Amino acid sequence: MADSHDLLPRDELALLSCAQMAEADAHAIEGGVPGRELMERAGRAVALAAMERHARRPVLVLCGPGNNGGDGFVAARHLQAAGWPVRLALFGRVESLKGDAAWAAGTWNGAIEPWSADQLDGAPLIVDAIFGAGLSRLVDGEIAAAIDVVNGRKLTVIAVDVPTGLHGDTGQVLGRAFEAETTVSFFRAKPGHYAVEGLRRCGRLRIADIGIPSSALASIEPRVWLNAPALWTHLLQRNDVADHKYARGHLTILAGPHATGAARLAALAGRRVGAGLVTIAAFRSTLAALQAAEPGNLIVEADDGAMFAQLLGDERRNAILIGPGSGVADRTRSAVLAALAARRRVVLDADAITVFASEPDLLFNSIAGPTLLTPHEGEFRRLFPDLGGKSDKLGRVRRAAERSGATILLKGPDTVIATPDGRAVVNTHASPALATAGSGDVLAGLIGGLLAQGLTPFATAAAAAWLHGECARLFGRPGLIAEDLPALLPQALQSSSSFN
Image (cartoon, rainbow, N blue to C red):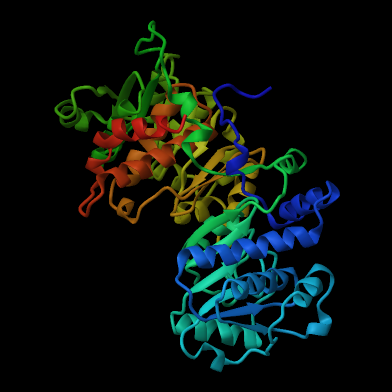
């Protein structure tokens, strides 16, 4: 039975792997939509994208030897019929084309030329229909040379499905990839579109309806979605007239001996996002400074792990945040193990992750309740050294979540959130302005505040990541610092509610 405090999957936000997209195509064909009709609609969608974005101009359509090339032949025909001057270059032999691609080539009335850099004279608009999302080998030879010269001249590229060289599942660049102004894909987006290199190289992403029925998703059962408020905003609407502060949860944050500002930022974010109470557990030496700061924060002493564990005797402390400024020390380690043993809702960030770098299995084996880890790439590698690297971020995070038993949020412009059961969300609602000290502490506090209100770690992470990015968007000018973010949360929450 679905948890009423968890994400509500939305079909329109599903991200499909290359294999799942092939299933969707097959579903449509089995349902009576011929493959040629799917190709015709795909090619027409590409041509329409070109005509909507640009005034009539010379076009060079680059076609590959498979179905992606077939889409290119159709696009070329539609552009030519609309009066655009079109040339078409094929990487391969016409006689080698098969199936629907061979049919599409047969509908093209113009010349089919071999590739030559001379075709780029006059800076034509480029339609990249060489390889689609399922390419699994490095791009080399004359195709690599073509990509280099097109990118080098900064020509305008409209890519079919994905820019050639970008893997649709992982977002990995396979040696070379076009830098597109627009990418036209079909039915649903793919994870690679929203990976870092996809964000860099796809330009404007258009998802075209080519006649695949939405019923295809029922058999595919998507497990990955693009993050958006429609998934979780219903969980943030609290309208009970009998609500009180304890009903909204009590977040407890472990502060460290020196960087107490991190805990303060997290506490303020936790309160702004709706936690009823927030306590900072701190060293005696820092109590006075913390008590003189934000008056709404509760401050208690916890000089060691044992004192922190005693605080957990109060079951109303239902959410625990450890990591921001807590220090890489035995106190942090003990506090984490106590929180996990108490089976509270726990978010571990920064130092609470690093302190287990030499014994990750101890951490994983101790996870018995709702737990969320929020590493950046460096911290991720400390816990999962065999899953490091820059490619296939989605796959890495899903494997890490399964191994650890925790929901994991791996930060970045393409933040990936994954659960132990394999569900995942990709969040791209972010801003480079968030690359400022303390921004991660605010995110951790957002997560803690939402966990305190009873959301699952998965829903919490998705909502917090989007709200964090929305605060930066609302700031809307240079000069953002972490202290600005909590004050923008009421507006961000209002923004998210408009999607409900």
